[in-house]
Length: 292
Image (tube, rainbow, N blue to C red; front, side, top):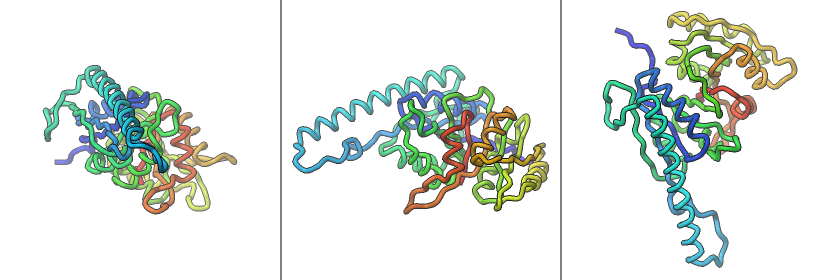
């Protein structure tokens, strides 16, 4: 007996800011779509992480005041995050549950973990089927790009990066940015739960000196063996950046999600996102599912 791929364990990282609403909407929609569980996690910084680096001569009372103020702000943000989470779960009817395998219906758990967001997302996300994060770089979201980078290379899991607006249906028309690389292959595999039930799948290939313009045809054949009908087309950058060309075509096709590999180069243990990935994450008006 075969089973369709599904996201059963969904991590949603919340911060108590305006990015929580789209994060929670997307995570909740995935839970309903796949009868899954949303692990809603708030990262509580340790005392050592709450105070910015201070020079010599700073008194203990000043440091204590700074820590106290930072803790109060963290408490406020957690309260805001929890309110947003409760509004989402009540709106779509998720059941509070914290033990596997679950109640047989879409469920959720809200919890906090100690540590910086970039550390917490790895510890909490490494066992998730998919991690939902809001997009770094937006004015209303302080979530650092480092959190996305750490999640991308530290968990090996697909990330669904959401902008301020999330489509009501996440498996409608989908676009896949394809190149013959491990990153793109991992993203394609990570997106299979969405691709399996999609209304339309578009394989987009930007012909470059490293990628043949017809490279997407083999992926069309592969998906056909999984019962997924897809169409492949070449994207001509026309002098634009590849990321801009891919986003433009995905938008023209009415895609609700863009699936792509997350690229970059290592600097010590961190990934510095490459030009195409960075451009897409900074400018996409639709969710982007990426994997490394």
